[in-house]
Length: 241
Image 1 (tube, rainbow, N blue to C red):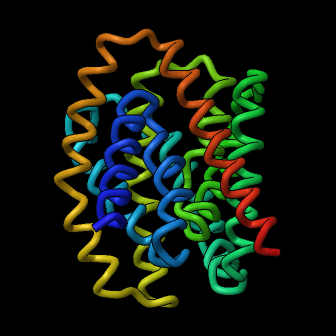
Image 2: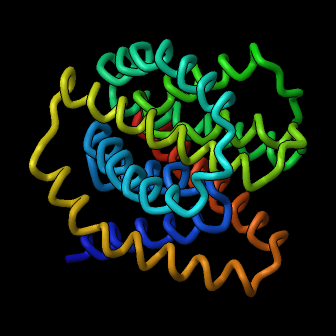
């Protein structure tokens, strides 16, 4: 019973964060799901629920999609997917958790110090490739996109719509690739099915909070959650070495 409550709490918190940031679900959910599930299970649950979120949100904002940018992200991601699968199948759980913690802490530091990179056509492909690698390996395509978009002057609505459209593609490809080469389980799909109502509840609560709270507060909360999660996983993985 305790595990179920923890699972639902993780999904609810990640769904609320998703509404406020547009990137938050996988970044928040995957590290904590690793506490309850094996890496392959945690990643596939995250991917399935992220697909549900992206599909439910894209309908309203599909007209804002930048299809040229989406095309470049998609092409780049295809090259990254097999490398991500190789990492997933070859790395042990402790090393895997350590890698995730370092990634989260590095991401938080770069965001806090307002790291910027100028958007170019070539970098679009590179960012897509890194995102594809991270989706297949750890179920988190958001970090490279989040960092990349902090340095661009593109309209926020267009960024959000294009990102969600890209998520639909890369999550689907990554899930299919994992099922074919790494397999899946009944536990993964059952857990995902039970979590779907919690996801929609979190999205609803997140929308209400987003209208009432200052965006700066949301940003600070995001940094705290990312760094706290990263530190917890880092300490836990180092203890087990």
